[in-house]
Image 1 (spheres, rainbow, N blue to C red):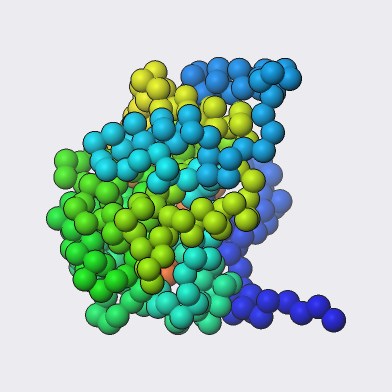
Image 2: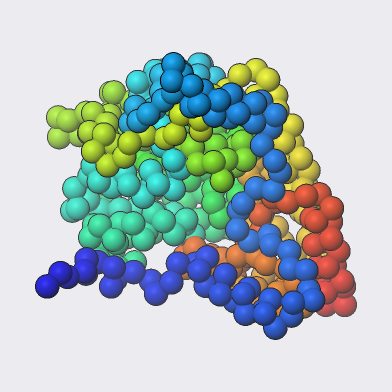
Length: 398
């Protein structure tokens, strides 16, 4: 008889967004007349930029001709894309094309990176935290349940940037600009983490999926801006929010060749893992991704991001005017709102039933998220204005 992986029994009952989807589905079935606006799940709304579409079409045409047809892609990515990323994202940093691995998403890679680490490693995560970091470590058996992690509270008391662990850890998940809080980290603050990791032998798993939204001087785009990061850090980046690739699926993970543990190159280990477990990202997708890293592509995505950042500015202004304390939304596409009575799920229900709006309860991201909700800034500007008008109407007499 086949048996299941018992570690799945230790997972939280439902994935956060599954619970949200269930509640929304029930509400919509009872109130089909209401146009529900989602500010919860971080999915983009704008179309792909013309440069990406043109490259995608040209690559599809390539697949129609024998002489330009492409079968299996290189597991680590085509050189044309890896070189374009190195020359653009890392042009002023010491990162080469063969230290960049192309994948179908940062979610996939942050979930799979544990394959190259021992199950006895102690894992530290920020609190609140993106649930995938926690759930995938439980699935693997590295943690038996949510209590097995070292939690690093990110609260208003520390300006939402956690302090160094107070006990030894081996793997440290950092996400900046942070999901769900939406704040960035400065070079001085991140230097403390890099120094700590190099001193203790820990490895930082740095999720920089939202770095394209950074505008504040001194806030980090890449951990490799920090001296010493090459010997202690792995970085994950994604085109999902940067270029609207949520439906296209393309991301990249950076593992320097200098990063070793137990005398082994983590770059080589990840390459071995990828060649075994995946067959690469489709050629048309990689050609479309490469268009992002052209001068025209960079100009196009910056224009698109600017539109989302205008949404964020409007939301911060309107939510503050409605009497709420808001954080984030400057260097990221997320706004973190303090719920007046501290009950984030009740606030979620109140917004859904009273205004037809969807947010994400902060307690779904961890203990320190209780009392907050997350809003995303993605959407058409008129939709955002309508959502803010509904909130103003709901709370004008509060």
